[in-house]
Amino acid sequence: MNSIKDFFFLNLNQYENFGLSFPIGIFLIFMTVVLCASAFLINYQKRYTLAVLKQLARHKATDEKSAKTLGELHLERSLGLKYALAKSSALKSMVKMVGEKTPTYEEFIENSKNKDYKEEKIDFESARFYIDTGAQAKVQRIMQEPEPAWWRPILMSLFFIAIAVIVGVFLPQLLYWVNNYVADK
Image 1: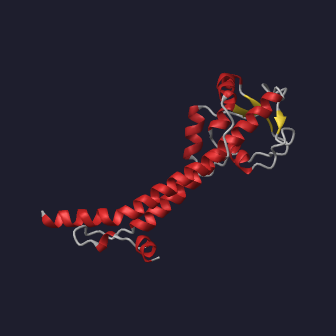
Image 2: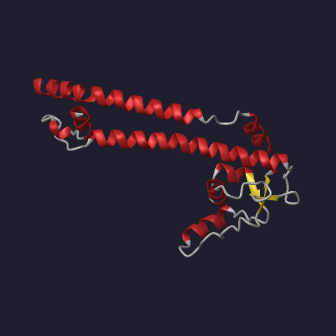
Image 3: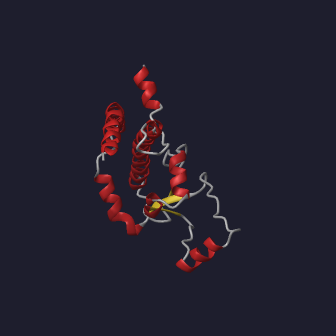
């Protein structure tokens, strides 16, 4: 228990030759949590991207006439999907909305300079989506990939935690050796 407390409060100012006050233990734990959360978030993003592309392909929604709403695709509850369709993302480059205006480069620059400019909110109840004709090949490539496995983010998280534990066990000794090496020079 004492070594866990020492790890959490491990700080470079404990070593006189470093001269820094930096909480290494807390930083290492923070990075581990961020990496684990990222593994789950990336897996979730791949899942909803694949889900919407499969549903659009299944319904043959490849133009404005055959476009479908999220309700028709049974994806109306996915907040991550709605966010990805509303903001610039890889999914938005493949999936287009009926009536969506793509600004030219000049319009985009002008809008970004205008502080009062706000993008239109998308009404996801009535908005209809389809696969862009220019992205058909990319969509086919993505759909041929296997579905993201649920165990991969868990395995990655265990890997990150194991690395953090190993670093946590050996870091104080390593810092001690470096501190003594610098003192001897």
